[in-house]
Length: 252
Ligand SMILES: [Fe+2]
Image 1 (cartoon, helix red, strand yellow):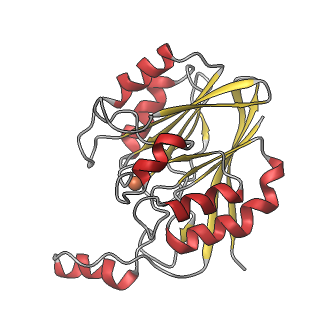
Image 2 (tube, rainbow, N blue to C red):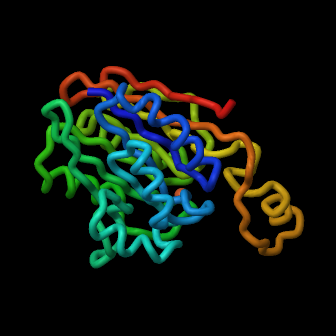
């Protein structure tokens, strides 16, 4: 079973990269998952961006700390294959995990958000324990949407041997660490961003830079520029990952 996980699709360049490139390679994969929390203009997911992502061939869309930035998400999350972090408080709209099926495998996909330098949420470690225990599955993929690589690796080691893979998102800069932990769980600290890197993590350079130079709030503007499609490819052998490798394409 081959799975492609697309890193945080950010604003127009991110959507353009997905629409231009994913249809060309979609047949190489059984499943495609994408983080779409920055798809609508850099913040949140709306109906238009969701439709573009799905039409390109994505099976499941995940969110993150920008989950609720666009109001349309509340309607989408009730009826579409979209998940938000599982460690939000009880009563939060939507689901924090999803079951996908491919090649005779029930793949449980769980997203949790970290707590280091982020909004306080419930314990991501025990949240994953509970979902793994309560949800019948053959293999599990955990997306950890977090700032700190330390927290991502702590979760990786905590889950080592119990889940197929732990993939980090949120920082928008891909890391070159894709490998296996001692008990066989595949890990990468951050898949990276699908969007333009002629930016500051997807944001317009002038206004983002002004935040640092003036220490005052600045208007949010997403950047335009050459788009990159950045993802991580997982090749499964039964319920385990046999190979993990970063995937990269750039707009001509
Ligand atoms: Fe994020």
